[in-house]
Each structure stands twice: as C-alpha cells, then as structure tokens.
Length: 390
Image 1 (cartoon, helix red, strand yellow):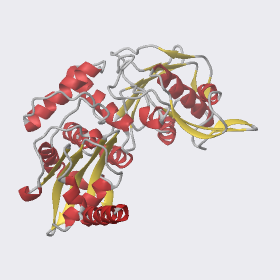
Image 2: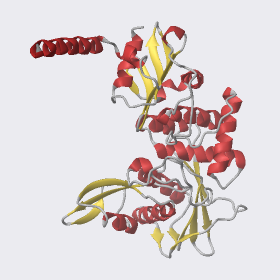
Image 3: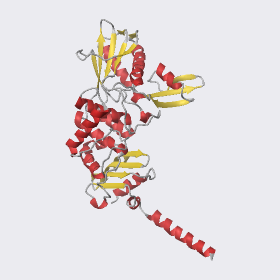
C-alpha cells in the first residue's frame, strides 16, 4: 500500500512539474502578485499596469529624458579655468561634468597650452558647485564602482584603477598616473587588480588635482607650488573654458549601457543646480526633478534621486510607457538585447525591471515590465522575447 501511495505521489509530482515547465514565462508572470506589465497598444497583455512599483535602474530612462529635454542631445558640459598671472596659480572650477576621464584631461591640457599656458605656481580646485556631504538615498557604503560618491569636480567617475603585486603598487591603466591618493587606497587592498570608488566626496577634488598635476607635467607645463581648494570669484573671466568632447547623447548612452549610477545622479544634481541655483543640493534636485516630471506628465510625486537606487522612487508600468513614448527618438541610446529589443534593465534585491522597445509589426512598441519580488535573473528577458511573438 505504501508503495502505491509513493507511486501516486511521484506521478502527481511529475504531472505538476510538467505543467509548470509547459507554462510560458508570460503565463508565470501573470501569477506573480508583485508584478506589472504594460505594452503600448496591447491592453490585452497588460497586467496591473497602474500599480506603483519600485523601478530600480529603469528610472535612468526618465533621468536621460529630462537631461536631453533640458540641454539637448548635442550639449557639451563645461569646466572653467582661471589663471592668476600675478601669483601663477591655476584654478579649476567644476560644474559636475560626469564624463571627465584621464583621456579628457589630455584634451583639457592641450586647450590650456593653446591659450599659452607654460607654467603654474600652484593648482587650486573649486568644487563648490555641489554642496558638501551629499547623501544619495539607496547608495551603499561599499568600495564598488557603482557606489561612487558625487562631486562637482570628478575624474574617472570617482573611481580608482589600482594594481597591487608583490613588487609594488601601480596604476591599473596606462592613461592614468599613479598618485598619492591611489597609494593610500592600495594599502587597504589585497594583491591583484582592483577598480574601487573614492568612498568620500571630499577625496574627489584632491584626486582630480593629483592626476591633473602629473598630466600637466607630462605635457611639458612646468608645475610648482601646492594644491589648494578654495572658491573662485564669480566676476572673473575664465582663462579657458573646456567643453567636453562627449556630447550629452554619448554621455547618456554610456549611462544606459553600463547602468552608471554616478552619471545618472550627477545629471540629477546638475538639473537641480541649473533650476534652483548653486550649490547643488539633494533638496533642490528633488524639487527640480519632480517639477520637470510634473510639467511633462502631470505626476504629482517626489523622486529621491536619478539612478534608481532609492526604494522610495515609484512609477507604474503605464507611466513608464509615457516616458518611453517621449524617449522614442533616442531609442538607440539604449542597450540592445537583440536587433528587435532595445531596453534598460533595473535590478535591486527583490526587484527586477525591464523597459524599452520591441520591434513588432514593422514598428517599435514601448513596453514596461516591473517585478518587485524575487525572480531569476533572465526571467525578464524571456518575457520580453515572448512578447515579440504576441
């Protein structure tokens, strides 16, 4: 009798397993209590489309849209340089440019040389465009690159590429020189190659100055004196104003492709400073961002930051469709899953989201998938692939 019960149990288990396996990912989605789906023009596929969900990094699409609306796709962010001929001190004033890399510094210095700069007797960095000790809701205190602090003057996304071996410490990339701050960080790290963030906003201007000073010398500009940090005077005319070689479209494309939290929240702060005046603060940026959203979509809601780190940000799948409809001209700035899907993922613990465009019926159809419960990592991709056939 016992064996008969066991046989029946295994038969039922096999039937149940077969039924589950036979279900499509889309069918399983409709069974999830904390999931939402919206597909433009296909209300029969929608599932709780008006329920507010945590969007995670799909919020970067909204941030990108607001930035593009504000500045335009061909905008180039600026950095100002002031040179005091009496003292020989060169001042660098940053305005939050999120894409200042070691390679961009080479272009900056060439611009200074073209203006006739041959020697400096001190380097001053002015990062006063952002307030001190900025706190981003949802940002963790790890040394991972995606947790990098924000600052008005930053290089390499406020991260360090360090190599530590038995024979010593070196920069992990040829275009970036080894600096004293890199050596300090390296002492905390085991052997190997590491990409870590600066952890503290206060380190950002110092690191920028250290790299910049070495590069000035590499370009043949004589450097002496100290590195200082003080505010520049507004009435001064810049000796040189550098325009980043990257357009805003290129910056946004990198943000979306690599889900770069640093770029997203630099844009978030810059939007606030431009609307409410400097220095940029979290409060100003929340107000400015939320007001821009209200003006575009008439949503009366606060957005706490621009990268999707905060679990206090909420948006519905239908609302994301509104964003995607306006973002359509910039669709190809998104990462492609294949040549028929351009979309942005979002991931937090217990949150898996996906929003973008499906190529259906000879056109691009916006879709938004928000799951605020644990699922497998590629589940959202399988759902999107199935939507192509619907």
